[in-house]
Length: 147
Ligand code: RB5
Image (tube, rainbow, N blue to C red):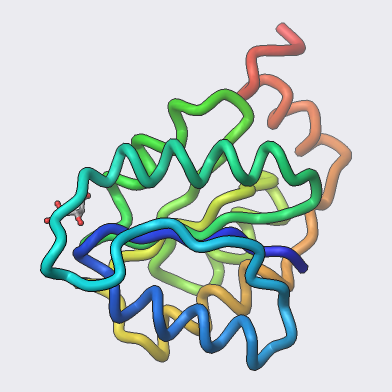
């Protein structure tokens, strides 16, 4: 799977861990967005918008965004039409975000999730598949279609 990965300064270490994990799991790290170290303070909405555009321009790819909590990234990414970003802290939600909500961006918090949990959440998210059916109707309504 092709993954676009981004973080702000609040989750540099987590981004590095996730990049290494993606390579180890033989996923394609299609692009990375964000500062190289935490000395550079950046605005997470800028990273989220860039990442969202990359995911939309690369059909079939998924995005991963990390900041301190994952919350700001999700709020900003969800303003990009076509992006469905989910903040996740448990494995069940990671799976359901894909299966029921067809989330195309996973948001993680580098200051709230330990690296092993974050890797498990990412692995679970990537393994999930959209179930379609009644969920497709609901997702269409998120996107403003279907009444
Ligand atoms: C940056 O300090 C922090 O506000 C950001 O990483 C994130 O947690 C926002 O939601």
